[in-house]
Length: 90
Image (cartoon, rainbow, N blue to C red; front, side, top):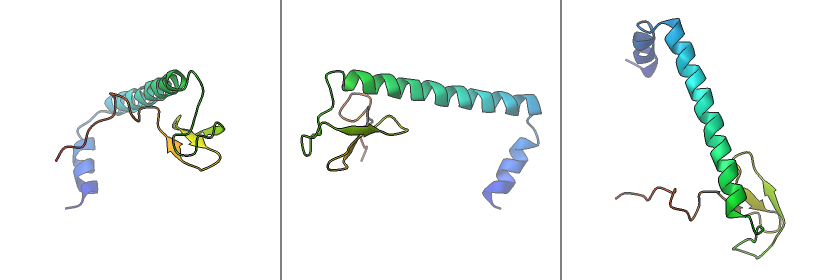
């Protein structure tokens, strides 16, 4: 049985109100997550952006609020090199 059968099996027992509530909660979470990334980016580069790779200072802000150096094209995440990054577990 495929995953679509599993999803259908669950959905048939969930009311439409519950589904709408879950969708709204997901949209709210995405909005909050984006706001947090935007704020983290502002604080991380409060004194200006300097590329660690080429020392360039010109950048583009991406949709995920990462900064991309316009000289060498290297991207930097707002949570990169912070305590918020999750370590890989072996």
